[in-house]
Length: 211
Image 1 (cartoon, rainbow, N blue to C red):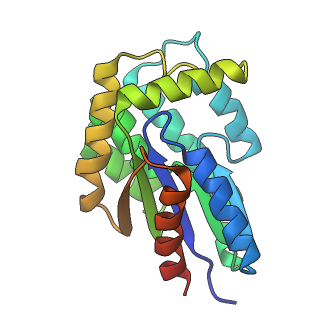
Image 2 (cartoon, one colour):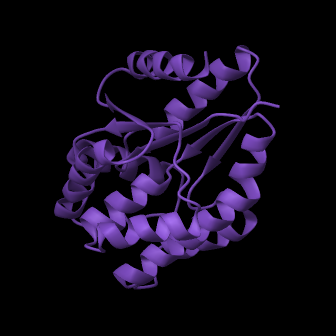
Image 3 (cartoon, rainbow, N blue to C red):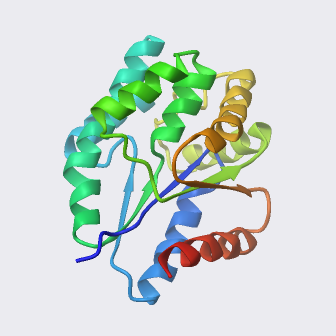
């Protein structure tokens, strides 16, 4: 059986990843693809516990502790969820992967990029998506979107939204500057447009990968 393809979505808060992933899943399933949707943190049972600890307020993690917990989640995610699905020939679509750790904990938090890259190579088998879609948005716009969404859902996953604008600007710069240096294909898509326009560009990239 041919190995499946691995697709990741990354971007700042409020970039519309969840919406676009849902639309892409519908498209892929209508084309006969067996699709697994997952996310980080939280793509395993253990990861869901880590997600709660990492995304809800209350614990003042150090920059390094936060980084190591994100990677611990990824180790479980790859072993328990991603690799079995790829081996079975499924298309795996994840909401965030290693590039997000490089942007958030590396570029924005100040943890060494080289250290995160080495840790990913050693702990995660240096696995990179076949395609990473970066939804790029002005942090001012994205934060407003994200805060409204969380409030409407009565969600307490507000830890990163509570950080200042300068942090989110560093995240955005990290995505754009780091992506060209990493293995695999990375595509930057303007996330400020109409959802259907964004989705058309995403489908073009994914269909090219899968054809």
